[in-house]
Image (cartoon, rainbow, N blue to C red; front, side, top):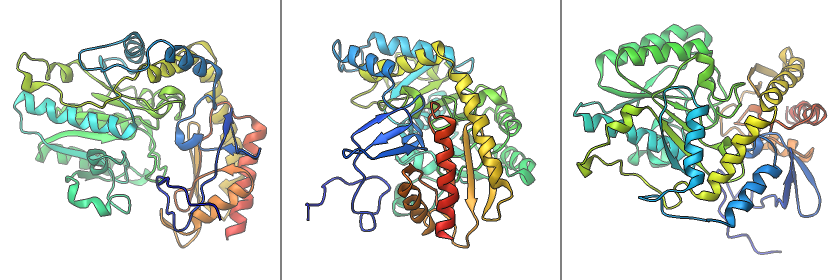
Length: 419
């Protein structure tokens, strides 16, 4: 028996899944093992791959930059890829955002956003420290991001290190106004510093979606009370909801926007937190105590920035928006066959993302049906990673109609095998 790998994998119970699937290469929507087995990546390798694995333009950008400058301290120094990327992000983002702080993951981008908020109010001498968040939200696994997310199995062991967050109810169709009223009431009676939301659709919280007009109303309530709005676009950005950023569909500009995942097309880890001018200005002073005290060793790594610049160029030069629209249409067409299928409930779609819940008594993230479904899908060479009984499909934009058929055939057969 070969020795057990020393690698400790994320979100993996090694007692139940001792052996990881080894992947040697990727191309387009496919992953390939060392022995030649091909696996269709229907979740974009945890939502990051947008244009397909190993896109040649991104690979070329990485190679070129690696030969020029690999890394430099970003405190007091800068470099062309970071400067160009920051300018491009400001150009692409909703209007009014003016400053870009780079980091290396979505969780940290949210962490940065929350620290920006607290620093803003502290430097202004105003006692606002309450962070509000949507019910069921998930914002990452670092301390502040985890605090802002829903409490449950993800965070229970770490409760002593988390701070309290005010929750407002998720705007399910029958209680949209309840959400708006709850937010307004909270802002009236508490010193709310900021509201953080995943625009239009939640991620790990269950792929629950809500309409753009609700996001607009939440924005307006925050603006009326001087509360900062943080848009966690880590997952929703870069076309996933049908537009480059989800906030566009509500016609709003948040005070702070966090982006990651698709920022480099899924090639390298990079994140960015974009802020309005007044948030930057609150930290701008000859008094060094007003400095924004956050950094990581690889802040704005030049090679990662080069990958992100190549991704931006693809968005500008290639018909990516058309591909996004085509994928959304293909997803809708394939989802219709499950709409009246009694095995499934709450069949839904937001942009390029579809989700449907297997109608089982044992539901929730830790439901045994989740790993059983994953194994059934993988047996058909399709990578899907259900959130308990919630199956979602979030493929790269290069996926073909025939490849997408394989995904939904796997869902059909896989569901039958576990019921």
